[in-house]
Image (cartoon, rainbow, N blue to C red):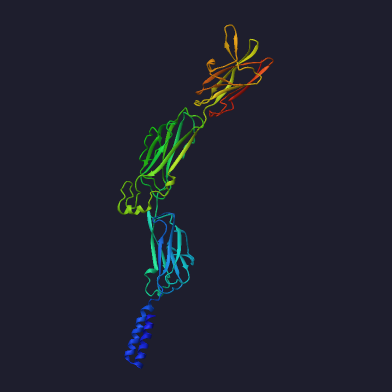
Length: 476
């Protein structure tokens, strides 16, 4: 266009020179030349910028997003805008969109691309696109760099009149792999029996896609409820320390490969005084102790410095997901106590002019554990009975007692309107205890019904509660 203007100006000057003399022609030619620079600047100049709006480096498989913006920095309106966005192969779930753009996807060679078209772009105006994808799930090495590219009007560069350096942009996205440590109590028992051996199996898995550095497991087992015995099948090459008084210890390993695991069995014996329903809590928390191995320092224990450290620092973390680093296990104690009440013996006799029933109840623990919680034996009788009575030996005959205080009764029982309650206390396995009750009949009463219940409030967890109550009838 400039050449055409120069040619036309020169022709005009020659014509004027032939008709009006050389002086006037020179003046007109100088004026035309003064206008040419302004006429040359009235052109479009498209440029494009590309930025990554998600963290860089990105982790394998994580979403990545980019923003591409086309600018018209020229002084004239542009031709219709065409933006080409390119992603390397391996990026998946890609999408591109922008206000005023229509995008179509395609692929060529080792890249996937989007062709996005829009209308003309006025001078000084911009128009933006967004590009999103998932980073490659598999990479070469611990981290790999990928080039993401953008170009504006790549097939119409002639219009740019040589100003094409700003028509393309690229950004290097680093995709990194990280370990992901996850402890679990796989294989452990969720139930226990008092006084029996118990095994916890603790497993540390690396579910990430990169080997870990030195890993430490902080472990706690329920001190007081469990007496530690030994470790077995220990795969932690750094070993496990003995539990302290609080049941805490650590296990160490130099590395857990991607997809690999380390395992240890923890054996102990439960406290024989545990009762059914008691809960044993074990916990484990995993953490990395040193920097991760890199391409220049793969051997665990080699300090990570220089370029390798700079390459890791942008990640800001040493694990892919640190929200799964803790695991807990609750083991419930199975009831091992089995309380039973039975009528051991009874007799009917006369006390003065009243018929009296003597009842001897036997409470026993038929289980393998010991009761440590306070339970009681409750004996209720029919309302036809008279006073709350028991016998005390007199000088000449039996004496019918119509009152009761704790010091008057060797078994420390208490009396209510229609029942008698006696504390049972602790009962070891196989131990029995007897309780005696005397019931006085009233005039005209022919029989009495008595019901005995051990642990009526269910304060002692038991494996069998069907034998906790007995009802008997006694003729007078």
